[in-house]
Length: 268
Image 1 (cartoon, rainbow, N blue to C red):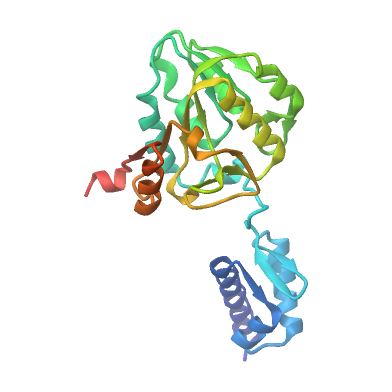
Image 2 (cartoon, rainbow, N blue to C red; image 1 turned 60 degrees about the vertical axis):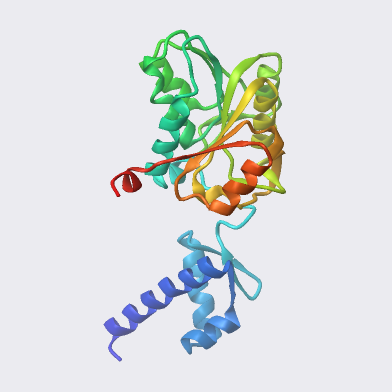
C-alpha cells in the first residue's frame, strides 16, 4: 500500500469513527479495533487526534459524543445551525408582540433572529441579558432596552450570575421569549449551565406569558438542569419538522404549540 493510500484510508477511518460515535453516543476501543481491523494503538491515536480537533471526547476505553448531556454549543457554533428553522420560528413569534409591550428576550440565536424583526414595533421595552441583542436593538430600533447586569459568559455573549438575576428580579414584563436546550414532557425545559438556568427561571417568573422558542431538534431532549416545567409554558413555537407525538402530548397538557413553516415546506 502506498503512503498516499494509507493516509487516505486513515482519514476515512477517522471520519467513520466520528459517525459511529455521533450515531451511538459512544464507542469502545475494542469495538473500533474490530470494526476497522486495526490495532488498539492505532485507534487510540485516531481518538487522540479527533479529540484535539474537537470532534469527540475520549474516555477510559473509548470515546463519547462531544455534545452529550453535559455539553453545550457556544453562540458561535449555534449561529450556523438550523438557520432557516430559527428564522421561521422568529417570524411566527413576532405575531405575538404588540406596540407598547414590555418583553424579555432570553439570550440565544433564535431570540436574536426575533430581535432583528422588532424595528417596526413602536414603544417597546426589551429586557435582555444578551449582548448581541442589546447592541442590535440600540442601533436599529427605538425600543427602550434594559440590560441585565452581571458577569459576561465568554463565547456565549450574555451576562449571568447572581447580579444578573437580581437586576431583573423586581421587573415585570408582558411576555418572555425564552430558549432551551431541551424540551421534554417529563423533564420540562432544560439547559446545560446552572447560571443560565437561574436567569431563565427568573425571566419566567417576571412574565405574564411564557413563549418558548425551540427548533424541532430540541424536542424530546433533556439537558443537564431543568429551569421550568411544561405547565409554566403558554406557547411553544417550533418548526414544522417537530415530532408529531411530542407536539400532541404537549397540547394534551393544555399548552399551546405553533409549528412554523420553513421555506422548504412552504414551497411544496
